[in-house]
Length: 232
Length: 408
Image 1 (cartoon, rainbow over the protein chains, first blue to last red):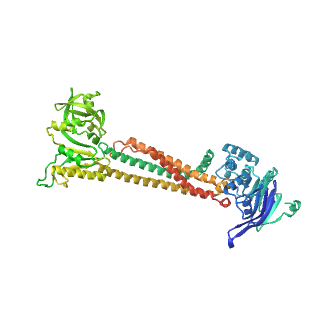
Image 2: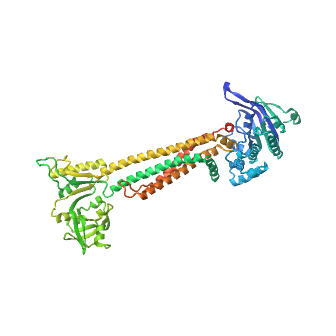
Image 3: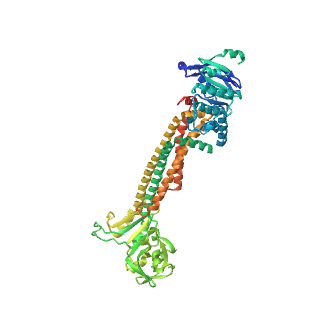
């Protein structure tokens, strides 16, 4: 699903340049649940932005669902983000003035789906994450865990190829965090490719594979799992 | 389209107070512009109304008294026009369009038809008089050259005269008695100048002279100057003064010898004033409008800055730059369009209200705003709204989602 070959990325130029990603190569197969770990400054946010087509890179190649994602116009990038990727953010990033249902429906607005059709579908997805009864509520009226589940429903509604979660449990307490990870695993078991960026070990351990980043390089695949999956 | 509008409604109603206040400034601008323009139009109509009775390009000349000695004659001599003045002026003053003399039969005359009797003003004139007085014939004809040269006893009567003497009957061909002489009625007229004008009876100038046994006296001379400019009409007035000075032997620079009036000069001076009033109205109105539009641009910039995060989220979810521009631009357009339209309605309502309440104010009449003006004002507002929204929209479209998502 994801194929990254020798990606480099730097900010700034000349002596002031900061090389954030030095040489990153990795693969994520369809249906995998993978975590990317790294301390702050390791370049994991940048990698996530590149994976999410929110940011471009300098060298290398990034294939998503066998499409080369490179030098896209803003329009194409928006199109791929809308069709291929579902985002879940640490701070939920729901629109505060829209109800849970309208938030979930929003990506479909950009596909030109009619209001009635997208609200109906949004209701279905909210029910799948167990929040059908909260559809009319504004985000401010929901708990943190509920908000993140709304965000998950929003990420799934376009039936993307890839679910990208950026520190999805960063703003949640432990119990809620585990519930959310259960939800992500469940979604993964239904066939969705899921990539979770985190710095929490217990969260990373709930995924099937962990990629560690350090100083802009992939440090090493998880030793024991690497042994089990030699080609990964 | 509908989808987009619903989405716009969501964002506009979210900050309702700000939306209303911003809209109010634009509405106020348009309101002021419309009201000022309407009031300006009212002043202009009022001024034209004051001049409505007479040709606006006419010059009239009456006899005065000489005030300086000239060619051996002592001052204080009254100037009375003669028939040859009519010919000389028409021959020597280039550019005269219509020309008439006036001979007043002083005071009201008792006029009768059958047993009906009343008094009216009688005026001896040339055929061209109807152009100078803007006389509208409703029945029959006005006086003609043959009436003049044959000194016919014919009369053209105002509609009020007809009403009093004939009731609703057709007066044409009937004979009325003026001071013991029978005149045949050949025409009936209307005049916008009011009731006094309608109580007049016109007879041929030569006939009037005969009746008073003053066959070579004319009281007043009037002519129109066609489409001459003010300067040209002034030159014509000067030339007429020169011709008359020669005929009557007074000093050409003796201002007292003649009484002259140039309606064109007065009218032009007045319209000049109104042109400046119109310029002033536009400057003030457009200025007010501009302030409102700048306000909109400002608010949209604030709105975009405030919503950087929202725009980032929308972009992450697949909003294209074009859709972001549509969103911001649409907001500005809807805001200016709706509030501008409301201001327009309010302004027109006020104008209509004033128009229905104010009737006989001097120099103010029928304030109005033309439909095309209202439409172009609305279009102007929409265009300005688009302009006001463009830069914020452009800025919004360029928001980097990575940065935007990080902002709080």
